[in-house]
Image 1 (spheres, rainbow, N blue to C red):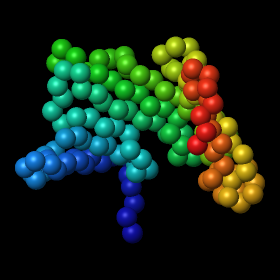
Image 2 (image 1 turned 135 degrees about the vertical axis):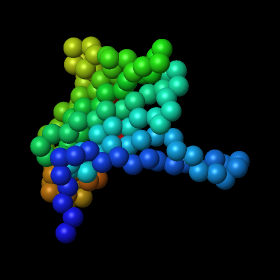
Image 3 (image 1 turned 90 degrees about the vertical axis):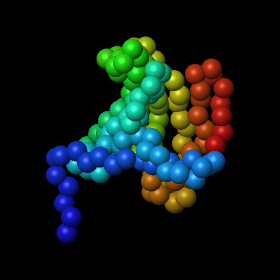
Image 4 (image 1 turned 180 degrees about the vertical axis):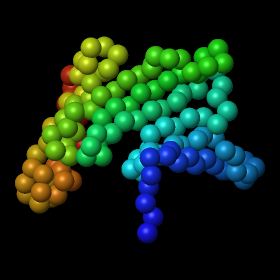
Length: 140
């Protein structure tokens, strides 16, 4: 039986060049003890490269996504994007802008899921749409 410990695991993601067919390592992905993706970092960052840092709550829901930019040979200490996610059960309700006093960026509307209830099937099939920052309703 395999059991995770508190140490971080890393894997290198390779991509195949369409023209040459060669594999090249593009980014390093880190997973925490719960096998959740926590970090995506370019293997060889260049000016303007992005690093992704994810955080999860006790239920395994992603509650934060931060994006950092590589500038002048180092990663900026402050994120260039900071998204917070608010849930009701497993249903995502809102995305907040962590850089702007948690102003809502998107709000999601949910209806009955495949089970005919609000959460019986985990919300699958119940997403009705989302309201973007510009205030228009987008149906899913």
